[in-house]
Length: 425
Image 1 (cartoon, helix red, strand yellow):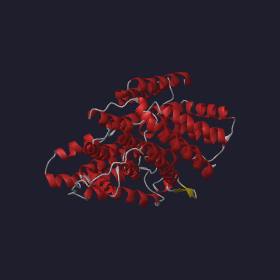
Image 2 (spheres, helix red, strand yellow; image 1 turned 60 degrees about the horizontal axis):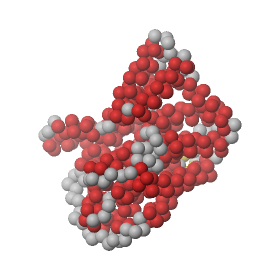
Image 3 (cartoon, one colour; image 1 turned 180 degrees about the vertical axis):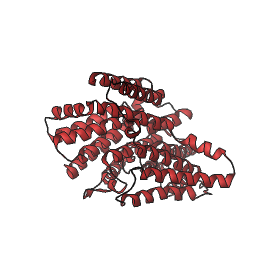
Image 4 (cartoon, helix red, strand yellow; image 1 turned 180 degrees about the horizontal axis):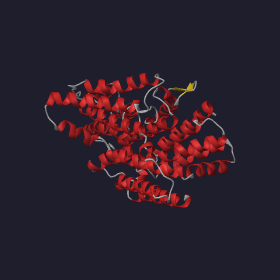
């Protein structure tokens, strides 16, 4: 039973790597195979409804819907315009846009952040007749870094919250200690020094640009409402398991109904649903079932035991192995399926070692989230940024990308690795 489950799991992962455009189809098909074999007694039976974390699915869908309305309102562009006005030259404008992208991505999906801010970088580069490549690479990798800062910043953070039963506030202060947010922010500050060196040649002054006009502030209120309500919900002890998901879905529906009342156009709903990344949602749903299947088969526990054996039951070795293996693996594969798989493994490792899993959870997230920054294909935000540049006629080579991404990533990972160990060992 274990051998068959392992073979199906490995075949699924190889297929996900080989056919990235068909990831959702592959995950759903593999999940169906697990369910069918479980029903026939060939594999351990997995309950589809309980295996899928509906709170995570609803949070992702609802947040994406609200973000689409927020982008449409042009508020992010207006905020970026304000930053540009306060920057003395191109170098500081590029760094400020990267930092701004990081701050935004702590509360909004990384890809959405890149899509919002990259056009500003393109406008500046065209006006000054300079290459937009360095700035958009910086925006992409900075947004990927800060996605781990809060519960709603990235899909991987939502997955961690589901596994560890963390709420919004726990990312700031957890079990009496500073949370992941502060570790990420310190890492982000340190990367500024790297960007200062990398962008030192961009000394051209920048003149004021026409400010973006925002005509609808309601989407901004909705996005702030998600954050406030998630914080309030975190203080409620007895609540439904899908509370966070209902908050995000509920505010998305309110935003769509209001937009329909204003426009009287049924296309409002169709357009909004197109902005939801159903590929990611279906991928996650399939992975939840697959992971439930290998967990029932006992493979999760076996993988955890193998990690413990490799570390010789030493916490520092285990923590180091988990962080840096995650960096290397996430450099070449998407971090969502990797984190979805490794979270229950990490739980099993902590149980076997008899320790609090928090250090290992945070190490996994830091390594997996930041590791994706190393290569152009390691994270969705990077792929989105490279795609924008390609449409503008700029082909970005791997080495050109890595000249910025490698020093940036190593600085962020090393600082995060050290800070987490100091706080949570």
